[in-house]
Image 1 (tube, rainbow, N blue to C red):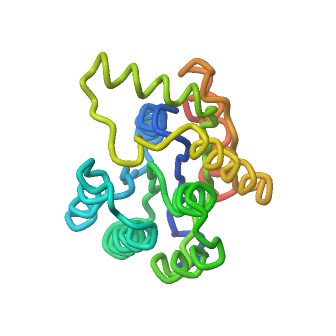
Image 2: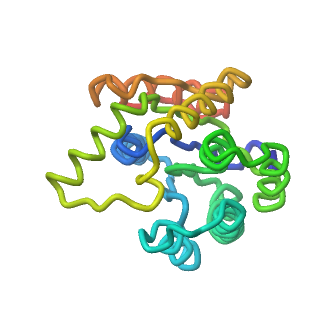
Image 3: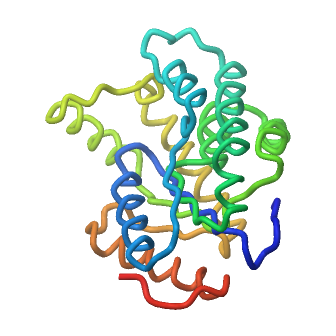
Length: 227
């Protein structure tokens, strides 16, 4: 993991899971808890996070791009991530800010690797190049089975007018493989991952996240309680 002086470097926390798992809600709650404690936070998302990254996001999510090939998809995600790390995430960490990001490289391994079947070793090499070796200090996985995630997205689309993006059009078997990928990665690095049942109430999820982040902050030399 790329680091400057460990005592001054900010923490890098990411949230993973399927769309509909509640990542955006939990990210916002965590950011607010950190800010209330006086911690400088940089909240961001992938794909996107920069002007260039947001334009790439539009291409990736466009429902009109159904013909997009898997290698194209992988390289577009990597291009957005390279810009994101270099322009925003790494400078924030070096300035001592805590970065909270909705999705990062683990999404590529889960979706394009386990889901689409792209070679995992090739994806790791591409990711290493795009990120310069940067890895999150903590990955929070909001675990949700495929049928529940698809039902949540369907309700959002019907009640809130939220249009499903290109990746949301894939079937349940794809999302079953994505979930398997996330769980396998988490099992390989339990100290770096926190797995939570996304069906739990919002307040319970937030409390569990705060407890784990509190330990991370203490290990990093920051004291005090998150609310």
